[in-house]
Length: 170
Image 1: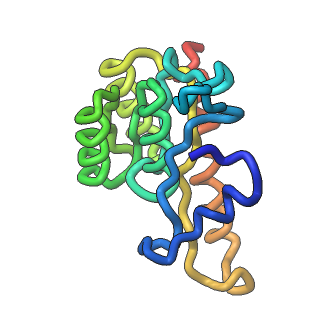
Image 2: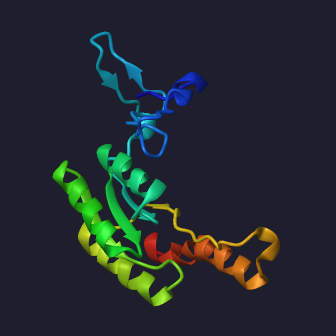
């Protein structure tokens, strides 16, 4: 499926899918169809030489990012707290010929991050791209959230910034 206009995106809505949307096969940005009807991938989305760390990869968008990127040739490091879900995704990607490594990691645990990065790089080589997808939600109305609640949400999102020297070889 090529998503290049609003009508294509609107056509994703599917009442027969539990989440209300079809699982899109993302071919690439500005992909085109050859005269023979085969998909042609532009170089704009070439990730075949990348090792991509995806936080929050156990479910939702992170899980789908991993599938799509692995399908386009990237080596993917699957990072999250839920090890069982990560292992099943790792097996799924490998069964399709992809390169993946699951590492249990909590983005707010500095010591755990170092161990996870070491394991990831031992399995797949140096990390070249970070998709900072992990996050937490405080299930309260925003007017009822405390400063501590807000700090927890923000810290989970910005925590990976502190890893940068490690994963970029610095």
